[in-house]
Length: 233
Image (tube, rainbow, N blue to C red; front, side):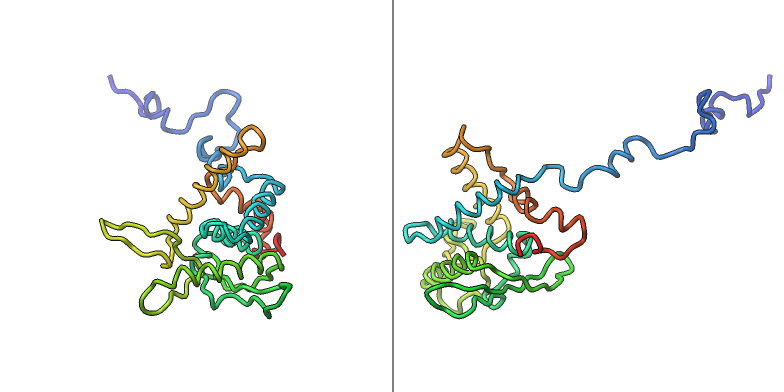
């Protein structure tokens, strides 16, 4: 017996037959693809603006004490620059001491400027730095000079440097060298672990990803396509 191809159950199923009552419903992408299309770019939500400001105050105040460890001063610089410019780790790692204009020295710090190359296209933008950030940066420049005092040869121009002697395949690497992105990630996590242990049960725990803090200041600007740094200006 020969069966007509149109009567074949296999061919009918591959022909796009619709269930009764849905013949006129327009075809669309699978549910999984639709969900992915509307999924947020950053699945982890940012902290609140108040929480991000608390982090900045905590670090900026601590950075001005002579007894504060260099790592905390460097963290204050990272948070202050991120708050003012919206820069990510990769953007900050491209900053050099020549990117800064901290204004005239004096008893009271005024405003400053910083030039940041943003994103993979390295879009150059100049951002205003409020006096509090300028104070922290000047403090870091003093710490940075001490870190580089034991280096031989020329001093690195990178703004952010290592603050500890590290080990690479059994070889001791001196402090005062340009830090890597992984070094910044680990430094933030150490701060989060100490802070969460100190304020456990008193404050909400800080996230281990610094991006969730950065976006508390600049998520709206990025969505609207505004220049980064508008939230901190």
